[in-house]
Image (cartoon, rainbow, N blue to C red):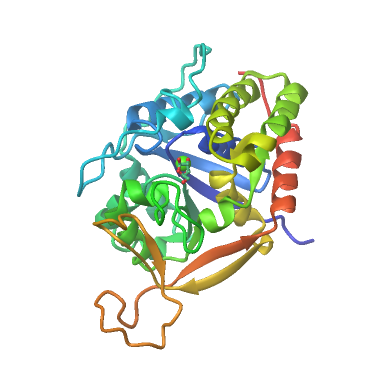
Length: 332
Ligand code: BDR
Ligand code: CA
């Protein structure tokens, strides 16, 4: 009998509405074992990100280690959190929260990643869906990290799709471009799930309402509230979202890649990040590696990233729906 695939995952995140969607997909998917949630600033402050990670897991009845990570980028001033997309609390300004008692793991996010990777060499995948400061710091603490982790999957960046914080930049990379460039050149088995695919996939508000209706649970009610807030913002921005309000499947697609990589078409090559100027945070893929460019930074031998360029949107959304409608929720 063949064994079902099993993925031990550290989820590096800045919850965040689509982060919450991704977290619940991961908790609900039988092949994913979340061994820790490492938080970073991004959609909200790192303090709020940790509070949200603790809350979102606690109300599902789970006890998963949650750590607090980097609070600001190390090499530049931080951008303001996008409260107009995710709400001031990151979850669409929840009217109230159920009291919960999960405690933060005292380690930093970077320390947690290093400790787990050393304890389980070759076993762990990091799914990183926020700015990449925690991973960059972990790499500095443990230079062998690329060999100690099984895979790294990053939701971030964009190659041909227009950016969402500038014409060329995606938010996670733009928030910590220096860290992102460290991550893209570190030499792990790295896959980038960027706007090229995440802008092709949307989870509608109607689908999340159906999921909430099905479970009648505080966790899916909170998710619906968050998605409604997010959908309202994007409804005012894009005509196709106004027609079918919903949430881009940014962060959840990183997990969908983990469990169903065949839904994606990939290109591979060296990816570098612009760390200043008008193109701040742009992710550039070298598709002409046979050219010896006079521009520095594109020399031979740099690590290669697999970049998701196309996705089967219908099957991705179907998978999200099936997994979230399964029997995965316990009482808080
Ligand atoms: C990414 O930025 C954040 O706002 C989302 O949570 C996602 O990780 C999309 O650009
Ligand atoms: Ca995120």
